[in-house]
Length: 635
Image (cartoon, rainbow, N blue to C red; front, side):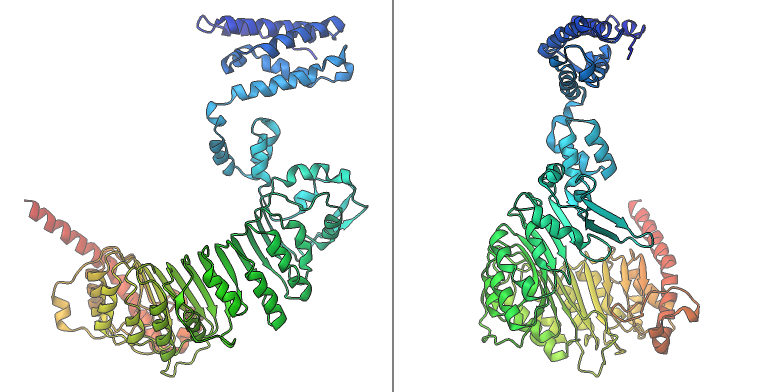
């Protein structure tokens, strides 16, 4: 190896940079180059290099500018790559000492901002895996941080197992699919774990889905039996485990005491449910738990109930409530903030509702139940719940009386000042039959007027809404903070509220941005055409669904443009109805099946498209007229 000094190097040292310290380091650089790189090294040369290294190791005035000007870092890199066995006096450890100096000087060459750990974390959080790997290989100072981010979140065990020596596992890929089959080729010994263990502590989040396309089961028995420690990833914080048809016992090696978030789904077999007590004892720091077990047997319900009662500091929870004991434990839990109930069986022998204070910290509640009566039953167990967000999803459409009882129970159970978001959704109405008993009455909505902080409201009603203009005006005045209002109506019931009801939202709801409401736009009273109407400029989307409308589309557009001059879209799409999309095509064959069966509704939709065609022109004209009026006032 021969390294010749650049003749321009001394010329680069201008008067401003002829610092005595720079010249000193430059002299050492020339001495190193002369002693070690001009000829094959002999013993005296090695001793000379040793003395120069001692000087550099003791030198405390090295700077990034000095390194840049003298290029001594290049010399030191060459020394660090030398083979110790071919050097005279190899007991002087010259390559290792040179590498130590390189590592020390690399820190000097980086910007001082990179000494701020938080800033380096932010930078690494934006880097893709390939860049993180390159950073870890090339920069020793940032290697640890880069590896931490590279290994932080894993969705497979393949990367981890790939750190083992060749010949332990055989991984075969199917050329016709993404199936990866793993099989053990020989017994796993302790030395096989040396490299994987170096990265195991860096894994903080793991999500595993066991099926035929990822993470084959062939690796789990060997991992569990040969693991040198108690847990595969000792610092794991988040674990997702989806293992239908697989023994849940394999999950035990992943249940580190550091675990704070756990999501798992599996078959509710006796073997799988037997792991729940261990889970409750080991993972005492859990704050978020989502489990999908679909337990039906009484013995399984008891096992789940006992596990739920072991939870002490859960903040977010998603589960099927197995029995009354588990529910009462959740009611008393002071840390619970978010609860998702995926099943609530009202056939259990519940006591008479007593409305005792409970759920002291609960802010978010998601109820997935079959019938509205189950949701009503749930709210009969406590009062004063400080909910901020409530979403109830039903399998069956609620009847009029059932919805009224639910609204009364909600009124009695929840804080009237905290609730900001309320959703009562059937999902879709395609299987429902509107026989007149599914109408949402005035009483149901009026009972909810007490929740004055609502900003989001969504109600689905198979039979439509029995609202007149007065009820709509009361609704708008009761919820002045509304930003989104969605009233989904199924069936073909003709609304009692007319186009005039839109003025109430312009008058009382200044922040409303998105609204879906059925209305009757056919009647156009003469006084509505001539009098001055209130304006609301924030509404961007108006969905009128299957709202009746006559041929006077220009007059309707005049009213809408006057009330909502900032409107960006008007659609006639029934959310919640199967096959009911917002197809803007004029081709009759392109319309969905539901509209094809509803000839009158199809006619309404075509007329509303005409209204939307008029709106941009009318809105632009009104804006121009306002500008003229302001100019006249300014004169």
